[in-house]
Amino acid sequence: MRKAIVPYFDLCTGCRTCELACSMVKFNAYVPRLSHVQVTTESNGLRAQPNICEQCEDPPCWRSCPVDAFRRDEKTNAVLIIPEKCIGCRNCVVACPVNAIQFDEGVHKAVKCDLCFGDPQCVKYCPTKALEMK
Image (cartoon, rainbow, N blue to C red; front, top):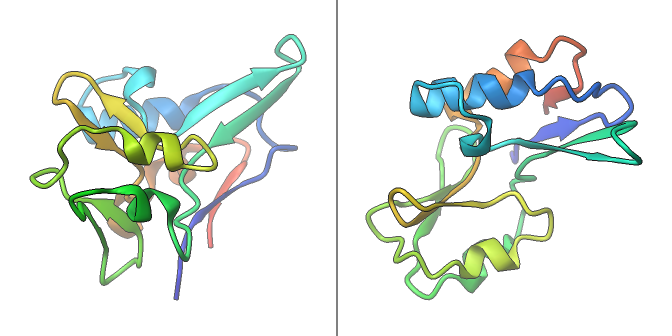
């Protein structure tokens, strides 16, 4: 069964705690720009929206990859990028319909949410419950 993190835009206050939790878990540093969840604001900051991978059933990112650098996690069914295979072409970044794949300039690879292998920290630490794993 497919699992994904569902954002509730009406509950998001734009505090960006989810970004901090993700970057700390993934990079051991509070660096929101490295987070696999990105909060965008609209209407002069009055509307915040967490953007995160929807773990698509038929992922456009996967289909766009010329080297088959994607797989599904057996436990969570999350769409994962295999770093050793990624050639940094950015096709997946462009193909993602929700802008949920980032390009890590430091390692020249695409990165995305892996659901923290079943225990997503962005969900755990969101103070308004604007993110839920379903």
